[in-house]
Amino acid sequence: MNMQQLEQAAEIALQQAKSQGATSAEVGVSHSSGVSVSVRQGDIETLEHNNDKGLGVTVYFGKTKASASTSDFREQAIADTVKAACGIAKHTQADEFSGLADADLMATEFPDLSLNHPWDIDADQAIAIATECEQAGFDVDKKISNSEGASVSSHQGNRVYANSHGFVGSTSSTRHSIACTLIAEDNNGGMQRDYWYDVRRDGADLATSVDIGQRAAQRTLRRLNAQTVPTGNYPVIFAAEIAPSLFGQLIGAIRGRAQYKKSTFLHDHLGKQIFPDFIHIHEQPYLLKALGSAAFDGEGVATQTRDIIREGVLQGYVLDSYSARKLNMKTTANSGGVHNLTIESGNLNFAELLKEVGTGVLVTETMGMGVNIVTGDYSQGAAGFWVENGIIQHAIDEFTIASNLRDMFLGIQAVGNDIEQRGNTRTGSVWIDNMMIAG
Image 1 (cartoon, rainbow, N blue to C red):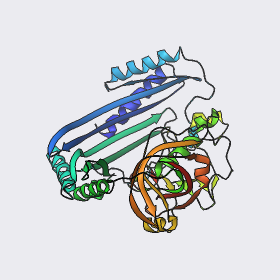
Image 2 (cartoon, helix red, strand yellow):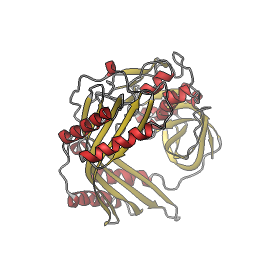
Image 3 (tube, rainbow, N blue to C red):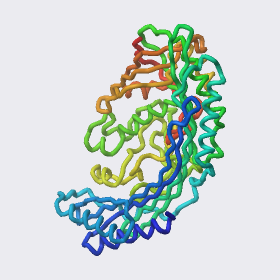
Image 4 (cartoon, helix red, strand yellow):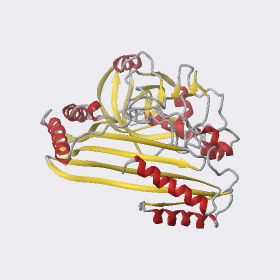
């Protein structure tokens, strides 16, 4: 479906909401299509084509609200969906903080952020790319004995958000990826697995399938012959590919919902020092081709480049309009999440970071759900490498890393310039001065 058809469906929903007595309404309409394939040991495991569409409408009667959705875009079906939402609203309790985002905050400029780059591949070509990727991994070393498969996906989507302020915003975007997971076996029968992948808006920007397969193999091989690490306190480097999870905990702790429920270790921390003064964390919603770029958030509010942490001090929370009203604040255009969260790096590359640390632990994978946002307590299963004299010595696995997020944030010594760009958080490897390691 083209954008005009989605906008027409949105307009029908808003007209129906008005005619059925709603004081205001908002609607999201989307259509996506694509192909995903996976290959394992040279055989096709899955081949999926998707062609999905949906319309979700929320109606407000004063301060009561209700929502309903449909995948049927016929006019009568949309009218019935709106009617269902209006019927539900009669039975919901009023909430003084509910409602559309303020009209004067709606986006009025819609720059081309270069998010839509259809990749002209069919299923056969995707299978060939996945097969080549996996075989490139197998070809690296005979110790690569098995595979969990290689995959290729390509998806394109159109989305329209509209509300009764008169706002209509549309976005066309693509997302393409190649991934490979391999298994290696050492001479003693010990086995390890690891992976690599790339994901981009533009298929032309993806790493080659051979590079991804070879990288997956190299990462898997280096995990063989893992040893244990003595229990103790050590410096820890979070590798760039997992460092975004640290800052995901930050965002979780400063979300509006956590703040108004007082269920976060960073409650009421605006203006307080929570990182060293060299740490600068900000949103960059207008980066071309980036996965987190957007001109407006999930409520139509104009996004903005803004500091979240400046000189280590918390500058602002992560708010949608509801949580902002609960806190007597203004939305930060984060309905749906942050937009290209960027942690500014220092001058050290990865090898220099290892050298500065000297002796410690490099963490390349974390497992489990051992993070308590209310207290900040952090305890995760992990895998990685022992570092000595600034050089990776050997793999270590089956160990636990523990601390408190408050101490971890303040204990950051450096952020490397090996920037991870495959997600919505952009950061290099992160060196933390001291964590408890239990072997």
